[in-house]
Length: 85
Image: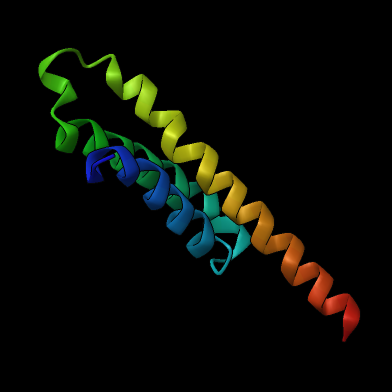
């Protein structure tokens, strides 16, 4: 496994973690363009765009699903921490 295969998942996870610290009103406005940018970068860095830009549709969920998972995990963790306090 090389970096171009790991990049979309890791970048999505990091994005989701960072979005947890941004104010709720601006999450979509910031998160959606960054997800699109990261998916585009994943397609270009892997060289898959030379075969077909359809790979962008594969990289899009590879970025967005880990971002959503990391965001949800962070929110649940923070909610649980607040209840324990």
